Length: 130
Image (cartoon, rainbow, N blue to C red; front, side, top):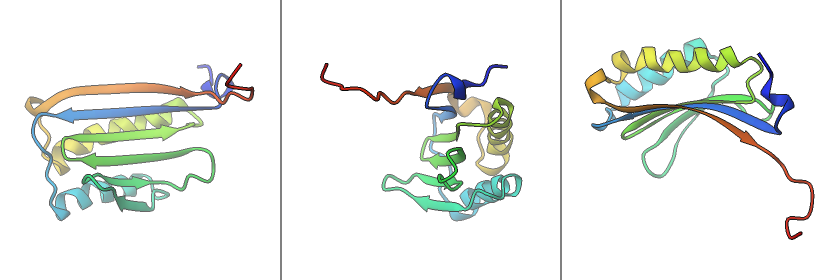
């Protein structure tokens, strides 16, 4: 398979699982989800909360490629920036989908949509005003 790194400055592969009902926000459920994720990917050490109730677990961003996952009130997200091998990102997303029913009580009835997105960033080195 072609490496997307040769086609863009940065690329990412993200997964969004949107639910009809709000996800459990209890400490035990959410921490269990992230702990199970961290067992598979021990380099994911940065855990923090954002303003709107979003909880994030991610790797250090210094290396130029990193993975992350987040839980929002009605969405579970997962992503990898500049994956060395595309299959690594797919394995990560598969893990999210395997863990969600058991750790966050997500059922097929509750799923509104499942989105897989490939994103590409290009840095323009010229004058934007021309």
